[in-house]
Image 1: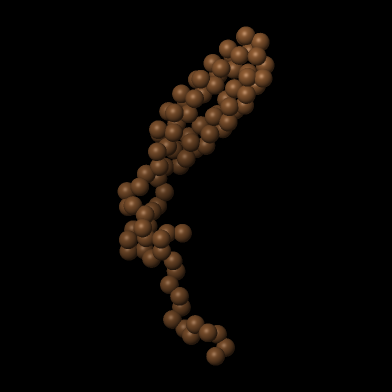
Image 2: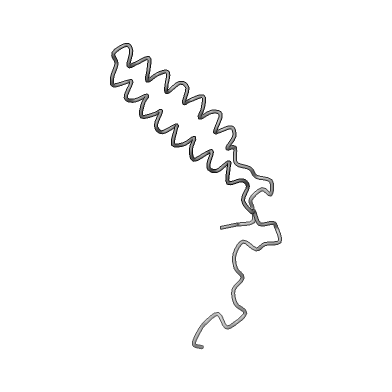
Length: 92
């Protein structure tokens, strides 16, 4: 719901989140491979789970980027539907 106090030029940092996610993805893949090679299966699984989480996050970020900007109402749009002009107490 719009309250009227939002900045008019607010933007979501999706591109920054995408690049930071890629950076994390590189490290998660490297960690999975490194821990698997040195015989630490627990840590390899932990990095693999992190790899999966980062991949899902990157897919969602890319989906939001491709959707493009959404309509944001201006200051002339009220934050809620105005009430009807009728009697506020029905039945009286």
